[in-house]
Image (tube, rainbow, N blue to C red):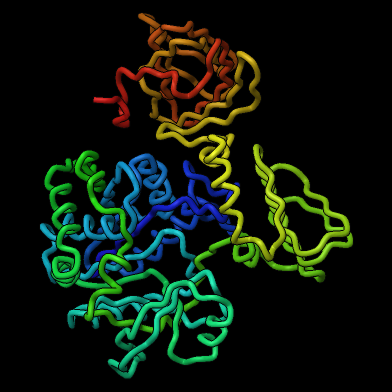
Length: 480
């Protein structure tokens, strides 16, 4: 039995301003209109071998959006298990927690297929073939990793040096792992037949993984076991939520599976992946997903290139026009514009570091923010006022809440709203409005079958998103 385990974490800082902490890289929409996470879910379903269950390890804040992307992949026949982290602790605790959670139901012989949520693999048939090969080695007691044949002297990837051959299909033991090399070393690896890129994709049995972790990282295993034992699990229909206990998970070591286990174990094998693979690590890699014009310019969105070469432009709303430039990356979002030399694409992460130091919200959130009930877009804001466009999904409801410092005026522009305002409850139709004074308990609900769209006008002395007291919430956001 092969159980796909998707690791959906990280913030994709090199793909800012589209990828942000609150809406990270796995949720990015590709040029074909699908997200990386939806594509990963479809790939996971293709290699399910009798399990009919797909596991996602992600941050608690990303559960509802992850569920939406799972539904977008139309995997109605599969069970979904979400292991929800209160904080990020890297890949080792995530993978071990998944193994411990699955062991009770499936046993030590079940095979875990661990894959990152932010890789792009188009050759599904090739991926399935490689997975069957990996599973056969996993049944022999190996921790199997997928190696990618280098196509360029890449300094942003780790490398695997192949050891002794294991079978006629190209599997080898692992001689060593190499951290991101300098350019000269990467060029040597490119012409060698012994080095592969480290993809971060793994395959192993639950029993082998836990036995090897016990041997090489026993304290980490004990910490994660304690967390699983104190965590709550809830199953409704085909969805299981495992809420990792915050107090115990915070004490688990923050370490990658590579450092904690893979580089220490003598049971590691590597198979050469005979399929296309792209980790879309920066904007140069992303730009290659679109076709170039005669001057090697690429664009996603409305653009006009004049005397321009080797440039990528992306905009979701505005026209981008360029004149007389070469080798630039231009990414336009409603609240942030990135202009970078293509040769410096890896340094975009430094922008995020500086924004964090300045406590600027642009590293964390977009103008459009996703919520379990739908989302909102900030249209305009100034001193003592903020205007938002709210979209509420059919059957969804905001929490029963109150604000100390702001009042709100809601105007319905599509659908019908059910509103609790203080002690009153009423239905508000399209082109009608209501006023929520500061200090009033209130709740907004969509009782209809189409999206509810409102314009919200906030006014008050403080308009921060943290001015909220929740009394009841169907999404588990009320503090206990």
